[in-house]
Amino acid sequence: MPTPPSQPAGPVLRRAVRRQRRTDRTAAELGESVVLAWSSLLANRMRSALTMLGVIIGIAAVIAMVTIGRGAQLQTENQLKSLGSNLIFVQSGATLGRSPASQGSGSATTLVWDDARAIAAAIPAVAQVAPMLSARGQVVLAERNTNISIVGTTPDFVGVRDFLPLTGRFFNEAELKQNARVAVLGQTVVDSLGSTPQGALDQQIRIRGESFTVIGTLEFKGTNSFRDQDDQVIIPLTTMANRIVGVNAQAGVSVDSISVSARSADSMEAAQAQITNLLRLRHRIVPPREDDFLIRSQADLVNASNSVAGVFTALLGGSAAISLLVGGIGIMNIMLVSVSERTREIGIRRAIGARSSDILRQFLIESTVLSLVGGVLGVALGVVASLLINAAFGWSAGVALDAVGLSLGFCLVIGVFFGAYPAGKAAKLDPITALRSD
Image 1 (tube, rainbow, N blue to C red):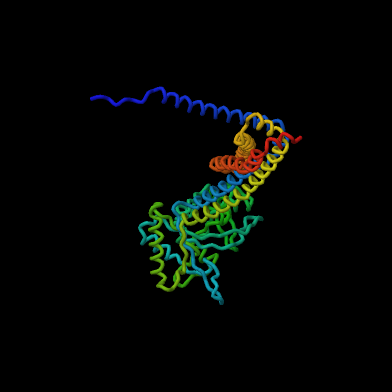
Image 2: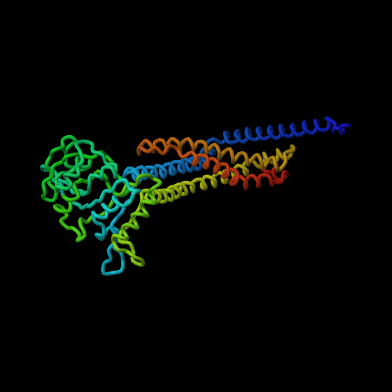
């Protein structure tokens, strides 16, 4: 079978050679334009440096502000996770005063110890439950005293809130049943009383006039967005209800809140729904009556915190980005000055064959190089500032690499956008008029 005649290799080869020559010529012209732009910027070093200053500060500020926002967000997440793992918080509901306005969650005594026992016994998705009753009070050791948070709870508090003793031990079930006057101190309390974790053991402290024996101190937890977790004294719930608060509900021992640890992260949603249904049954709540308790999961708190931190980061980054726009205006201003100063040069180049597109490209490249050089210097300054911020606050947020990439891209846009008008003005100059200028 005869093969179809193939196209002669000569025309195809010539077209490929011409295409390659055009590509090489374009690349050579672009390289020459970049060299000319750099030479022009070096010829006015001080002016170029001052022009780039706005871009440098803007880029550095954007990177540093985003780092601060994300560092704060990461710190808040870590603080919330330090409360424990797979936590669900059940809080007493709100009371209504004489007006219909709510006085806020936790203002009513709607939860009792038996609610916590029922949650632990009836809900399989729950691992441990720790009811809590708290109040402020004066704690005295020898001649030192401090006003702190006094928390009454059960031995399950250690597992639920991941609060391990640093020295000594936590109280046990026998001491809980006996209304024992024993206490476990947080590290802030130890410091406020002028003692040490080891030295505080077996000391006698007075809480609202009652004498307690210190049997342990808790490991350091730090401050979260709610309060200082180390500024508290932990005592048995029975002792708290009978000796410190002295007020019990008719249905049993009143508690302010119940901390619940789910068996796994996947079972938290099921546990939250089961706790809600159980408490509604126990409290005889039927629609349209509202719940007299509030349930929030650890994930809810983390999401709310991340949402606030995200808005905070966006505001910081947006505020810093305004300086980038100011820097872009500075670039346009200096490029207009450059066009006015180089009018005769433009006329000569047009007279010897330069096209309007060549002049346009030349000035666009100059503004872009000016912006990108400022951007690179700004990134370097921003990275250094981010590392210093992380070191100063002890954060592990690192450098916001996406902010670095976005800032450099923004610099390219600024160089082209704010350089377009001066470049267009230069390209539209009449050669004869340009040559006549001084």
